[in-house]
Image (cartoon, rainbow, N blue to C red; front, side):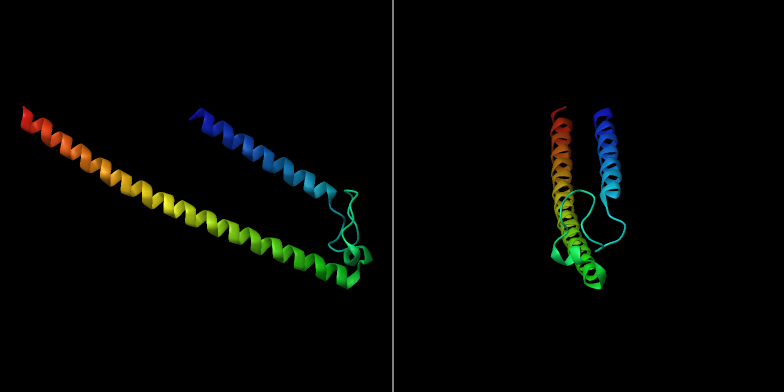
Length: 107
């Protein structure tokens, strides 16, 4: 149990640190040009203005949709795993009942 809690704490700390780092490296406004990370945001973003903001919004929408798709796949995998585990529980309960019956009949 301690290992699980430790892993959760480590994961939480990692996510917090990533969030802090990403917020430090962002420029002031979406599509306002290249960021502080040293890389270029692309020609449209470098130009700034309305097109830069529009391109930044499109990119954000793309990644938001991608993240939603990944979350949906994860939910489906978890549902599948849950149903498989419930099936195994029923099989184990039936086996326990069978063994109890054998034990009771043997006495």
